[in-house]
Length: 365
Image (cartoon, rainbow, N blue to C red; front, side, top):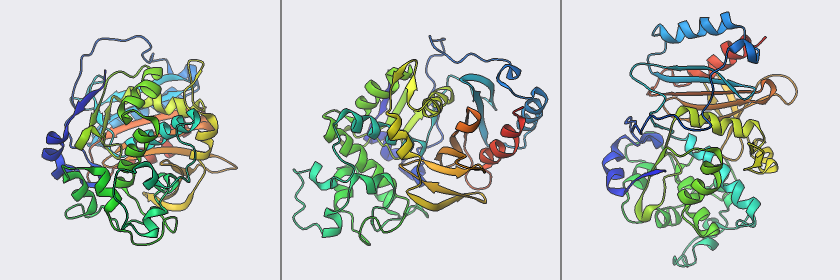
């Protein structure tokens, strides 16, 4: 079952929560095999050139990427490549950082399909009537769920440098994260421009709980993780048990691959529609063009998912990215999912993106 880490420990971790970092500790759970685990297959059986993958394996093992912890490749629904580095093991939970945000997007989609969320254009303040927002500006009153999903909140916000940032203040707040975000000042009307905002996703977790009538982590367990067979995970929680959906989820790399495969399958898992296909299609359409760069690759932004151009008509890579090297990359054109974890502060945290574009895809026959 999911594990939870409360607000006291969160405050102890706050000094390393830069850019949503939840610290390098990787809690390990029991390592017994479970039903429905990935089965490692011969790469040839899913269309890979084995020599090319062995060359990649040698590069990964020779120390060229010292901050890489794991690298997994799934093709056509089969695990074709799996490597862990240093003392890392498949059973360890690892910080997802902002990959947590992309998972939050899936949860919102489930709530929309269930009718719990009536409209993405609903003002956020309407979900929290018990807060006295009589002095809130018109900008704050016009903030919607769609703005939170697309990082166009209008908040006066930055996350780097972390020291003294609004994000640090949020992470260190031990009273009420929802109030913190509802009262944080605005710099401009929502919808004007992209400005990366982890606090907006924390507020989105609160909105999800209000709309569904259950805590956001319990909603995630019942409607996303249980159907996928994911029962080993950990949430960092803040005040009042609110999960840090901006960056506080820990998972196993193999379970990250389940998330990627779910997206590749247009929301279906073992014959069950877990996430609405229409929601995923909307999520992976650029709401913001050229929102960021991963290395020298420009990426667009959808509903808490990044979108990179693979080249060619309608060819894209859908990316859940977390700072210091956490990645889920989904390449529908090649029926491909790649997962990587690591702990790189500056230099090569985007190296897995280059590996997918330059090594993995080119190894497909």
